[in-house]
Picture 1 (cartoon, each protein chain N blue to C red):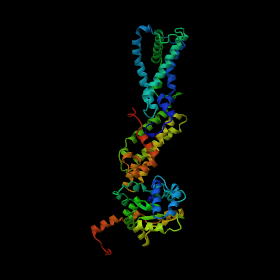
Picture 2 (cartoon, chains in turn cyan, orange):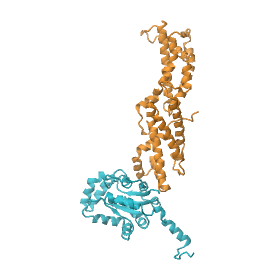
Picture 3 (tube, each protein chain N blue to C red):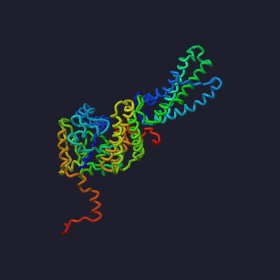
Length: 210
Length: 293
């Protein structure tokens, strides 16, 4: 079976200071300080270098047991400034997006969320919010920010679609094993193709008569 | 060295003066020794009157020796880097040694006297010219061993062994195949494993060389090549694992595209594999000359 493709939407180290300033401006000084103390251990030069738990990257966490996952984060890195080539993500085979909670406060990733939100909420893909445990006693600010930035995805979650939140390394381990049991994206009807079939053959509610 | 690959100083010296084939100098100067033991006496004649003519004529065997040495040096090394310089230095060293031996022979047989007086005088130049001509003459007259060495593969001390030479020829041919691939110029669909298979064959051939005993300098010089081939195989693997053609092309860009064609995000991805990218460039730009005849 082919590997499950994933992508990471996370800060780079040189973006962390901007987020810290934004958090302080939004009166979240406690969270800003928390991040400031840990940014060097969390982040690297690339989004893929993000280490949310135990000093391990998402790739290391997902493939710790067996190499069942492959990163397509390079597709996000290849997006141009105004996301005019967003199709490379839309048409990709990425099945799960891991979202760094702090990326919610960086403008580029907010803009990216704006472009992808509806599409991801409506597709068979999964969004996994990664929020390090112990971040804050009051997580309401963070959850609120998530709900505002990924509005459709949050709504889809409430309706029962699979867009989990993970708080620790074991959650990612559970997630990586669980995803392997689910139907793959390549096994599901591709919405574009379904729409094309409907246009060509029309919508029908009649059952075939054998 | 070009492309940021740091070459070992020992490898550079080897490429410049032919360290791995040091025996060539001895085998080249060996025939001159028979003038020392007096078994061969060459009558140069009155050199001082025909000096310039004789020196001009002696250039012919000198050039021939240089060309033969260059031809063998080409086979003893993977690339053509510094081939001319190395061949010229080797030729010069052989002729110098042969001339020195011929000159010492003259001293031993009482023909010449060692003196530091008037070192730039005409008689001194004539002695030097005679020694040079005798040295060249010994190469021409009694150089069956030397000709054998520089025209055929021989298992002799101080020279690269025949199996190394054969392996280098095989490695060279396989690298040429990879260098000719269009993958260097633009993204291509890898519909089969042919390119990867060829790269893996090259990797196996290189491993054979690394398993030979001795030949440390040759192995050292091939380490960047091995790294380049390993990276090439990794790059193809990564490209083939891309989820769709767009993803594959982006991965190709990370490994192969020039930096000015990359987005800011891709430049970051490139920086994470900068060493591998340099290894690839090194492989691509190896100077292998034309096809081996």
